[in-house]
Image (cartoon, rainbow over all chains, first blue to last red; front, side, top):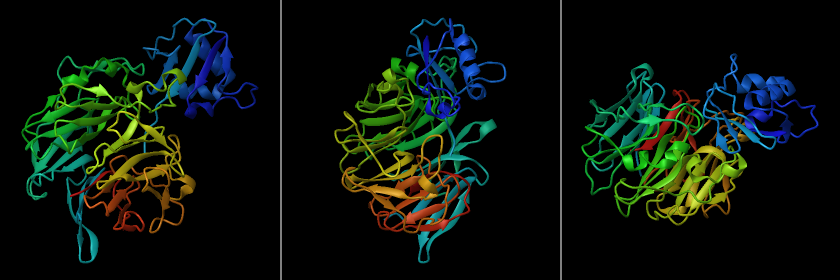
Length: 95
Length: 365
């Protein structure tokens, strides 16, 4: 099962009742799109913070798969292995 | 001590002078315009005001008579083939000037030399008082730039430029998010210099990648230039060897912030204006304070005398904390439009204004 980690500002939207710690979420998924769907089914509140209404990664959200950045905000078909590690982070701005 | 302050704000360049009655607003230039930075060039007294006019782009103006008159001069420009992007998954696009984030004067032996740090990540040099600029391709074309990315902005940017007082051809620049870089040949060739820094926002195995570090601000001690301080996204880092190695320093009540100032006469003395954390950019417990160390980060004082006693939500940007050449007088301002000055290294503060536009930068002149 692919493992998912989230940046600090996103962790707060992980469903709190879950038994898994927020930094050890694991899902069965053949590709990144499937993994995000499973993640959002698990934590529906998270969806709007990671993708827009069309399912595209938000402009300031970055996804790494096995420490390599996903080079597109729209093409999420990247295959995953059972031991893939996915890291989702976000930039923040303002003062 | 410096008797004048230049404040670059969202709605103009505000000049404050210290007279018999204390500090008072003396002039406003470019009223209504958004200023990102103002350089007071100590070599010849010129002022350089960097404007970010949004729909109309970035502009640069020079005054040789302390603001009595201004002349619009050239701005740095990228070439047609220059591209930016990639490090955070944003699709690469043509590079165009988006922000004049900082300006720095060259050495006393380099009249007319100016440096400009920009978003999307180019360092530019002028040798004619800003009449023309060129991109330092030795840094721009480093392969590590492909891993740079924007922090708060869409694209990476250079916000800190330190010209070494011992040798004007030696430079250190800091990039959000692209690490700290060092040149010994007037900016022609560069090496990365942020060993010891870490980035908790990255996947764990990439957290020590030097090329993705997010220094928010870097300052260098004038009298002891091997002493450098960085307020980083993940904390405070200090180097005592010119940046070859950085040591993390834990700062109470929070190591998060944007601004840092170092005493020009004592590299062990530094000041910070902390906030809670990146997703909560307000003072800890809503109690604004300035934090000072005088022993290289072994101990800290939380300075509050003269600062708001009640709840405060001020945030100080990276260029909005300044120290004058004496090392005694400091000033800082906030995005809430407040300005404070201390005459005694931060032991006591006095509010000079509470009605300014959001402040991007404060400079003694």
